Length: 508
Image: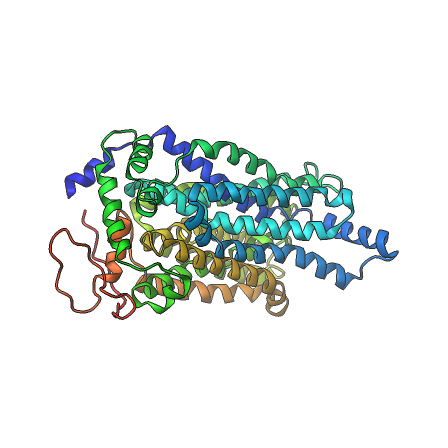
């Protein structure tokens, strides 16, 4: 077994594999871009809404109505994301991974066109509908990209490649922040172009995808096309001997054949799936309820409160830190492991949230604390990208075998989008009520997520999908070990109890 693993690790990363992964991660960049692009032109969009009202009704919107329309345009993106994330399982089962990404790009083109033409058509409704459509597209991307990347990557590099999804997201956010500067595309005349730029990556990905293979795991396990899967693996791995990969997929396929089709309700009813789906949901919540989006949505205001003279550039600086530490986690995730990095990230964010609270609460009496606020924000962002940023997206794909994976990705993605929506909707009111102490709420959440991760989340580094699934199901009942060559799984996932388990320490 050790020799087999050594053999796998000798297989290098091919240019073709990098091409395919890069193609998929364009969807991640789209998600990041559309998350960050709406913030910079806020005042321009508000003026546009007022101008449309004047043209139509002869009077501008009241301040409250204008704020409501603006908030709706921002929040509808997350509503679309929930719809898109819940549609992932249906799409990949029917169309496969690659074709689903191609079809999703139609939504990006439609949404970008609607927003780009909204000023010309004098329609704020086109902005709102465009944001909804783009939200559905991004919801699909948050499930499709990690799934496709995880199924193409070799086992020993799955964590590093999985981190590329988050890297794409943060690069997208940074690009949106830079392009949103007023002297670039954030002006009154160019904001429609800023919003419609999302169509360009969609076109690029649509051109590149036909040269990528369908997921070999999907070809072999779902379609039973072993020869096609073998051809794809030979190109991806850069060697003729892909027998280890094929054998691992066949074993997972055997297990899947003994399971009935897994639906979203079944994930919660079945004891065999309940533990990993709870872990998946909590990990997704740890990303959004950590407060990271609150920091990014309102970072300019935070820096302004702290006395920074050019807060928009400090916000872009935070975006640069965000990107750099995502690259750092790319190299650490296969060395330190997913669980360890997640714990380090959560702990760092909790300490940073405390420092942020202290500096913002006392900055009026001691102006030098403004520097502490800047350091705290940067440390908060850096800690996020060490663990809670990248890990929840790809670890969900690792926790489940081929059968329940699409449904699990849909549930996890919907959890993430729902939490994102609630934070975006509730943070302004919380900040109004709590002032600088609002980050204490996020610190409490971070402590809870740290404790949960420490006691309940297994390490998945270097394990096959089937091995991880067996770790959850292996203690079901008091079964004696099956004969060699058989697949270990509960006889009936719906009747056997599967308690929370601890994974054995990985052998060095």
